[in-house]
Structures are given as structure tokens and as C-alpha cells.
Image (tube, rainbow, N blue to C red; front, side, top):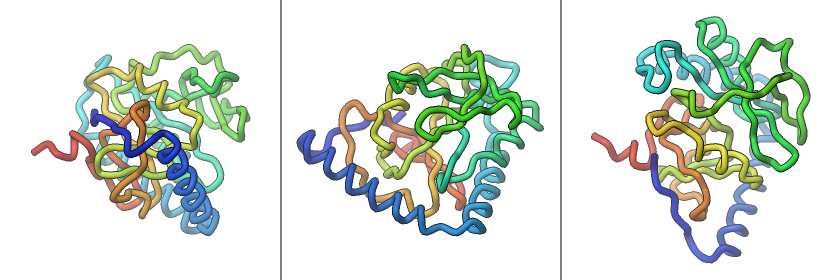
Length: 212
């Protein structure tokens, strides 16, 4: 995985993150339902075509993918969830705890999803799966850059969760087209990503992007 880094003082980084979050969230609110639906279908198609060629690296022989249930104007993941389940792929979904850390449960279909805290949607439980079992980890975000820095919503849930990812696993952030930027404010504690998945396709970033 790429190595994140600080860009200025903590207060400067936090202020820059806040300003960028405000802009991106406003841009997302302007997206119409047809655009969001088309984006979700494109994300599904790109993810499934790449997954077919990705070797099982962690647990074998079955493949495990960690994902999340999109809400609102986030890049849509529900078509991908169903495509993965239909293909026989085990899918892990996060459940947000009161301390903002994440537990993980196995996706059992849309009827087994329940409302979670802070507007999230999560598996009904029991949520006792281990993120370290995932071959591919797809996480939410608001932006990323080619150094592998990811901008989240500020709770730190995924920065902490990604410490448990298996060293052989690949980590990607799912974004809308245009949210892969030249630079994203980052601090030392921000967990990096290896790739960005948008409706336009995959982009390797960080150390993965520098590989031949």
C-alpha cells in the first residue's frame, strides 16, 4: 500500500479537509438520479470485470470482498453487491459501532440489511467477520489523489479499520468521476489506498501506481 504523509500543520490539514469535503458534498447533491444510477451500473461492470482476473490472495479458494452499502449521493454500490452475491463471492459489510469503529458481517441479501447509525445501512448481524479475510477491500470516500491519499468524512473509522487488512489484499476507494484529484490534504494517521474505482474505471495510485 502507499504511504500517506502530512501536508502542513494539523490545523491547516484539518481546515483544508473540511473545505474540500464541503465542496465535494455540494457537488454530489447536484447529481440527478439518472446520473447516479448510471454511475452505479458502471462501477459494477468495472469491478466485476477486474475481479474475474484478480487472483485469490488471502484465504483461498473462495474469494472475499469487503464493500459497503452506499446511501444518498455516494457512488452506488448496490448493483455491485448483488452482482458479487450472484457470482458466489463472499461479501463483508461494515457495521458502525458507537465508538465509530467498524465491525464486519457477511452480506446475506438486501432483505438482511438494516438501518445503522448516522444514516448508514448495515448487515443485521451477528457481525463477527474478520476484515483480514478479504482479498479486495472497497471503501467509501470523498476524494483521493495519485499519491494514494484518501479523503473520508472525518470519523476515522476506515483509517482504523484498514490496519487489519491482510498485507496481500488490495484496497481501493470508490468515487464519482472527477473526484480523483491532483492533491488531497493528508495526515500521518490517514490510511492510504492502492487504487481508485470510478464510473470511468480503475486507476492505480500510490506505490501501486508507480509499479511497472
